[in-house]
Length: 235
Image 1 (tube, helix red, strand yellow):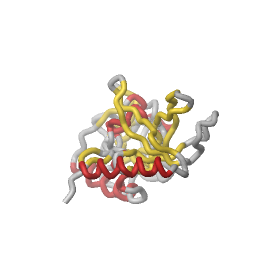
Image 2 (image 1 turned 180 degrees about the vertical axis):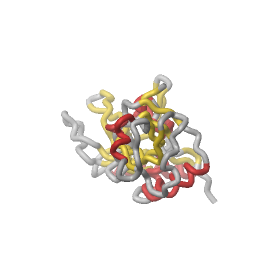
Image 3 (image 1 turned 180 degrees about the horizontal axis):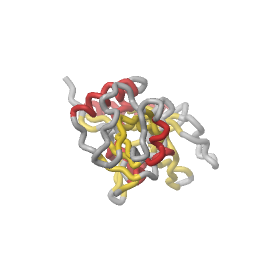
Image 4 (image 1 turned 120 degrees about the vertical axis):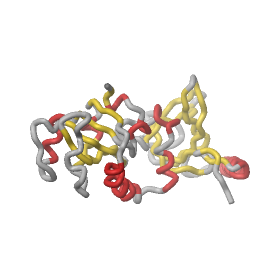
C-alpha cells in the first residue's frame, strides 16, 4: 500500500485512483447519501487554474473493490485538494467504460484553459522527480551563479523548441542576475540516473548574442525534428 505522496505524478495524473478518504467523504453529502462505511473514493486528478493538484470524485464505496456508488451520476460527487489527501493510502485502478465515460468530458473541460504544450509536459515522466507535490507545474531547475549550480523553482509555461520554458517562481535570496517571474529556458540532462534541468538562458532582456545562440539551437533542433517532448513528426 502506498500513500499518494509516494506515487510519481504521472502514475496517477488523469488516471483513476481509489483513495482511502475516511471522513473526507462526509463532505460529499450534498451530492450523494454517505454512510459510515463509505470511506473510499474513486477519483481522477487534474490541475486547477492556479496550478493546484486536485482530485475529482467519481464515486464512493465501502472498500477498495466496492467503490461505485454514484458512478452513474453525470456530475462529480465533489473534489479533494492534494493537501487533504497527500498522506492518504491509495491504489491505482484500471478503469472500466463507465469510469472513462464519466471522467473524460470533465478532464477535457479542465484542460481547456491550458496550452497544448503545457499539457504535454504534464505527461512527461522525466520531470516527476523534479515536480512540486502540490503544484506539479513547478519544477526544480539548475542555474549557474558564481560558478555554482543551484536549483530554483521554475513554473512551467510551455515548450520552446528543445527548451522547457518557464518563469522563476520566487525571488532568490541572493542576487543571481534574474528575478521573480523572469523567463527561463531549460534543457534536460541526466545526472546519476535521474533527469535534471539546466537553465541555459534566463532573464527579461537577453543579449543579442544570447538571443542569436538560442535561436540557432531552436532552428537546428527543428531541422532535426526534435523539440523538448522528443521527436516531432512533420508533414
